[in-house]
Length: 538
Image (cartoon, rainbow, N blue to C red; front, side):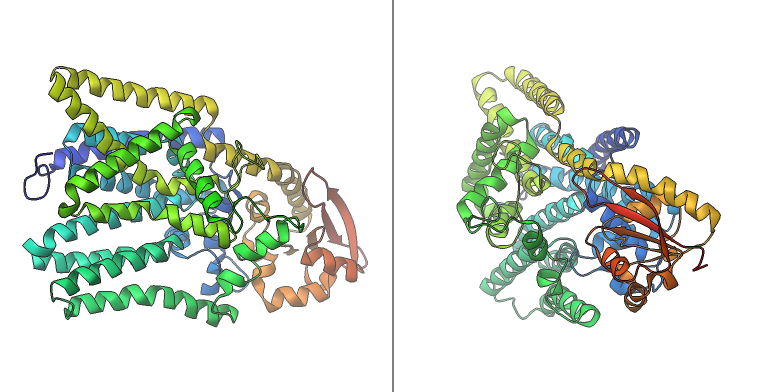
């Protein structure tokens, strides 16, 4: 590596423009495919994210607390303007602006990070493993939070490296970058809980570096520190004010822990693979990361090459701020702990219990793997240059062919996150196809009628019926919902209950005035039953 002022050379606007253009073409192609395949709403979590954003204003009682207590609010706030268009909420297009721009900015950020140590060719090839990853291309067509968080983590690493370069040579620029980094850490804190750990480590590192140089008294540092520290405190205060428990997100009825306890088999064995076993949890996460990054047969080799490139850069470039790029590896220990003790299981089809659950979490390591791959490609091309310079071009062609072959292999195997989405929607598709037509027929006879139902589990039933959420009385409506459960027939013209939910229990306790319209039965799901107000109750 030949450096000039800490980097290979300046990156031209034309170079960045080409990266944007190429990645935009890949993104658009993925969006068109996902739209035509009807895959944008495969994930139940994607549907739920859209639902949360929509209900902030479209509700019996619009309010800020509609953002919920478990998922962090930034992804929903970014979708908020777009879900106001009913069609975009119903078909999932409301998520595209945030997801697509997160993908594009993430690609540019990773390219800039690679270019700090590499020439354009190996940097572009390293970016290719990230930008052309089929799992990422699919997720950026959905309302899932991974593209946004990956973009944030990439730019945190990029600006941390830039800050370290400027720290001794340009203190004023370093001070400005501290403010930018603080804002981005706040954004990450309000996106995923992984961001809390990254914020703590990154900002502590900044503090230590300033302390060593006697600059810890800087006013800008302490103002930015107050901002970083305030972010999780705001979330604690929000949970306390809105839900009466400052840790509602971690121990409330919708928390990961509560869901695990409700869905796990209560035997003597572990609740899930890796439960209270950090090493097994680490292996599950790393396997998911491999399967999300490349074809199954190439996983171990790709991981080895990425680690090789990373370690080589660490030993040769540690004095040039490469340390801060290692922030991209934080997901590995974070998920090893979360799977073991944080009620966050990962199920993989190749390991027991041979299923698909949270496989997308492995995507969190994709930037680190792509960065390491770019560095390994540089090693490979430099070795060819030393042996025979004319082979460098053919070496690059070989890497491109391998990338194409990997993409074809992943496509043949079916990308892991897409396959999980397919499994996810198969459990919901039958009811989402059966119930809306019947609801529409009933509503045609009584326009504007109110429906009593639980929308948190089945939000798409409302969107596919073509009515606003405020035409329902649901679990988010606080005392209105609680009052309706006491006298269902006096509260709504239609009641949709699913075996075991609060509405079902209310109907069983107070069936008077209600007539059963139809039951909806599908394998693996609770039976749904639609009731209408009977003729005597009209």
